[in-house]
Each structure stands twice: as structure tokens, then as C-alpha cells.
Amino acid sequence: MEIIDAIILGIIQGLTEFLPVSSSGHLEIGKALLGESRLPAESLLFTVVVHFATALSTMVVFRRDIAEILIGLFKFKKNEETLFVGKIILSMIPAALVGVLFEEELESLFGGQIIFVGCMLILTAILLFLADKAKYTNQPVTFWQAFVVGISQAIAILPGISRSGATISTSVLLGIDKNKAARFSFLMVIPLILGKIAKDILDGALSYETEGIGFLAAGFIAAFISGIIACTWMIQLVRKSKLAYFSIYCLIVGIIAIIGGLYL
Image (cartoon, rainbow, N blue to C red; front, side, top):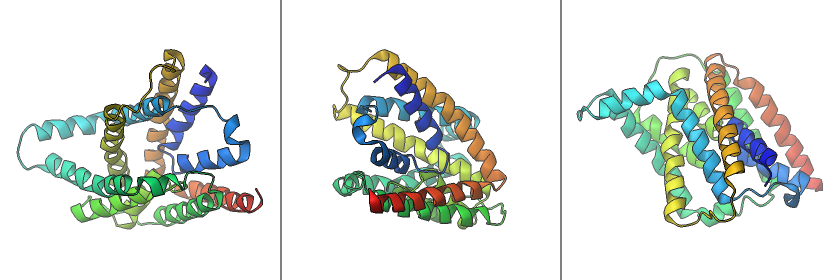
């Protein structure tokens, strides 16, 4: 993998991790259009590095929120921060269970299933359109809502379903304040990303022998910077009800994917 490839992949990861367009869906479409052999070889180590970069960019954007949560936790008593952490933990359960119990079934969907990806992108478009039209509220996240949003995060494992799009849309449709919905959506994914990275390291699945520090660093920096930009931008878009633009984009790409899948 060349440095330029690492930068491109890093930017793509940083942008699509937060913008509601489904990074996995776009990757599958790219494989079908270009042929998998023409795409840069993305090693597991590189994947882990760029995912860590986007997790770190989230922590930078929400550094004040995270600091307040940690301060509240170390008071060792029931308060708003400990309740919030409880909701985050609850939201992680569905995705963790799906990832462990249906790992092989999920992997089978990441093999050029372009028509399926197109259908899921259209579903993402519908969710974004409905969320964009939702009324403003001041309602915080409840434990029950956190679990439901967690289910949407688990469903977003499917290629073509945007994680941020699904979780934010579900939150808003449940009546949660849009700012709180975006905050919860981005913070809830940090433990999952870090947990997945820890699992890969402990399983010994990472290979350090064939990787060069140059393109790993390039990918990390590209994903980190683009992640900060995309995360900040997405928060503003949710607040200003601009999700309809991404709804139209996902609808168009989804239709093209379905048509392409029928003829490829």
C-alpha cells in the first residue's frame, strides 16, 4: 500500500464514520465497480489504526463531555454522569451480541451483495428523511430509548445501513432532542471501537511484520483530521435539520446500486 492510498483510505474512513452514508456500503459498491483486485489492500492492522483514529477524533470533539462524565464517575455516587454511562453500556449490548452470535452470517453479506446494499441505502435514506422532519424537543435519553438506539446500532452492522444515520434517526424519531441524539450517537460508539481493537490485539489477529510505519501514520493522521471535521459538521447538520440532503444522496446511490447489481 502506497502512502497516497493510505491517505485516501484514511480520509474515506474519517468522513464516512460520521456522515450518514454508510462506509461499508460504499466500500462494497467500490469493490463491485472497480474490481476488488484494483483496490488498495487494506490490512487488518491498517483498519484498526484508522478506526482508532476516528475514535480519538470523537474524543477530541467531545472532550468536555467526556471530562464531565469521568469527573462524575469518580464521585462514586448516583448522578447524571453515572446514569449516562449506564445508558451507554446498555446501548452496546445489542451490537455486541449480534457481532458475537452472527459473525459468520454477517461476513457473508460483505461479498459483493450490491442489490442488498442498495436496498439498505434506501432504508437509510428513509430514516434520514423522517428524522429530518421530526419536531424539536428537549427530551433526554432514557434507558429504554438507549436500548432501542442500541438495536439500531446493531442493525447498522449490515452493509448499506449508516451507523450514525441509523442511531441519530432512531433517537430523533423516539423524541430525543436532536443535540442530545447526536451526542449520544457519537459517544456510544467509542467503547465499541476500543473494545473491537482490544479484541483484535488479544486474539493475535494483527500482523506487524508486513506493515510500514509510514503509511500507517499517514492513514491515522488522515482519518483523525477528516474525522474531526466530519464529526463537527454532522453535529451542525443534525441541529439545523439538514439530513434530507444525505437522504437524497443515499436514495440515488441505492437505486444506482440496485440497477448496477442487476446487470453486473
